[in-house]
Length: 289
Image (cartoon, helix red, strand yellow):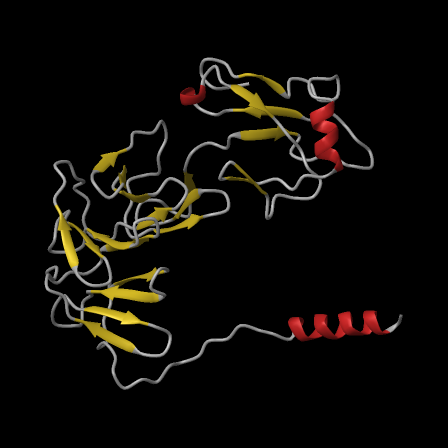
């Protein structure tokens, strides 16, 4: 009986002792030193893809891959011209690395599938150049590019400029990353943006006020639903769970982020009661409730 706690404590101590560290890989074959190059991780092939950069005398047009143990210079049938300070992002849905912008290249768009580079020639494109970051929005399956007061998205076929009510200042050399949990592109600082933080993405569908309530003390929580005009006048049904959202359940091939439990049964059985008011209704014409 007393052995279990001891085992748990031992495991906890072992996990706590694990501290991340940097390890230098001293390999013989490797790219020469450079700056303003770009790198993205190809999750399908499990390799980091690196292209270009300024090596001190010229703009490189080399493609290199890192597999965790060795660098490999990739020879392709078609090769983009040398460039640096360009944007690079991996499209995990189409399994290609997307590259655009950079010095000496204008607004060219290229894609690399692990074997060869292909230049894409859309009829409509951006005019953004160097030091303009790009990230991949896995929820909406588009690459998001921002710079110079403009937001652009690439879906694999065309560029589309997105007009928003608000946007960050005209900036370059900023940092961007995609938050895959909250489905938001996060932008920080840059030339002309001081130390400001911005987020870009679809508005949260379901919000609550207050955000949380005490299980012990109870309380009233008002939910606001915004599903967009595309779902206007459609039926909605709100469920609940006290067991979290992972791994969720599969319903007709769609993963629902909900772990059913006793609370779920109560919410379904007492839907539209005084406790669960308007949990099952029809959205407005604009998709709100």
